[in-house]
Image (tube, rainbow, N blue to C red; front, side):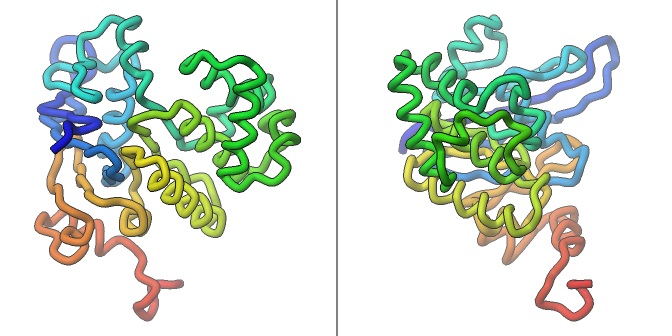
Length: 267
């Protein structure tokens, strides 16, 4: 078997300072090459904290106190900032809020092509041609016009498609998707999830998909880790966890999820 694209082992984190509040407790999970691994829990469970730890963008007030994060077998914990940046060339992020993630003062074309020029050394012309192809892949009409736009000139769904294109532009081994459809309406959310699933399968990219939405997990993920108050309470293939959730907290998450096949839940 090939090594995991991402392997987290015994990860703990706390607020900096003596006696700081513990935020993550001995978290372990792995994401296999080509797998979509769901990370699920209520708000405040620590899901985004894990994603930020992988990306190396924890706030200064939080420190990793124990454990290991390996990307393609390379240890990330303890690296210098420069070494960490080099190690993250195989990693990309799809953030939660596309408007705040994009630079409002720069055109879309510059923001997408920067990734390819930095990571792959492409010329400006080659990067633009690749950007046009990627925007076509994410079903954006008239991609040449969109490359000339500023973020505020696009809808929320269009901005999220741009961020997905930018993530795949880096040709990453792993994408951290931090609730990338939360800010979108239900119809656009379905389109974005279908698009993400199709691109993931085409490129065989591993994804750590952070969400509180079990419906999204059912549609997209292969395995799932359930997090509560910074602790892993359950891990299983998606089919197993939906059929036989073992932990009481997991069962409570299912009970709190609206079911539109039962009378009264659609209200």
